[in-house]
Image (cartoon, rainbow, N blue to C red; front, top):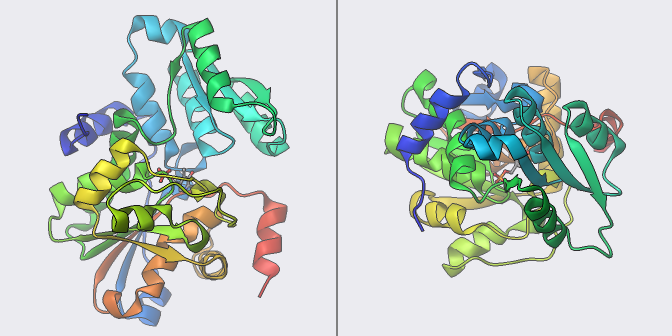
Length: 320
Ligand SMILES: *Cc1c(COP(=O)(O)O)cnc(C)c1O
């Protein structure tokens, strides 16, 4: 298995140029003062379709040959990956088919269809979504794009950290959320190339620390679907590619509790005027639990996304 490299991240950056947003890096004097650190927030909540996932999906679909473009892309996801593949396919003028659970939130179904994708629904309790997706892929000749364990997806996700380092120069520590590890492994490739001294940390929900367990065990650990408000990080295991990079290039994987995610979400809303989804709060929450280590440091934080149902968002912010 050939792991993607930083050269692939550079190539991905050229492919997404002019299609993905070059998202802002924001500062917060309040955060800096409270933790006696210098924070640099890379705001992927302002990315197209509201999350970094657009980078990986667009990069992967851009590499299709003529035959693949004709048939299009297929993916299974109820979250941001669905919208990322749907939007990328529309921009590249190819069909997309997304396999989603019947009980997916209406807003997500509508958003995915709104980007022009065909949606096939399945019953989570009686149907095997992977088998269904593979059957549809074969029937229609479509190319399956997984949400994280794919070299082109990883390389695309790495472009966010590349932009961050190019803007800030070297950082002492970089934090990002870890679900299946696409963002984490891509970011690690960029960090190792652009800031070799920078310590790199993934952050998982405490209830779903399969990545942390995997690092400790030296093999990919599988867990049951974790119960957490961080729905973008409810993955049950890392992938073969992502784990290969993470075990080599990531210093550690930390965790944050749901209560800490809500605290971070409130901070972003109150002090920085930003809507950040619970999963997007993992990196900052993890950095804040690392208070002694970040003191006096230049700290990069990747805010991964901002897609949250507003009624749900208000409900979470109302809890103390
Ligand atoms: C998918 C996603 C994650 C997790 O990313 P991985 O590449 O699976 O680790 C984190 N935050 C948001 C907003 C996401 O959409």
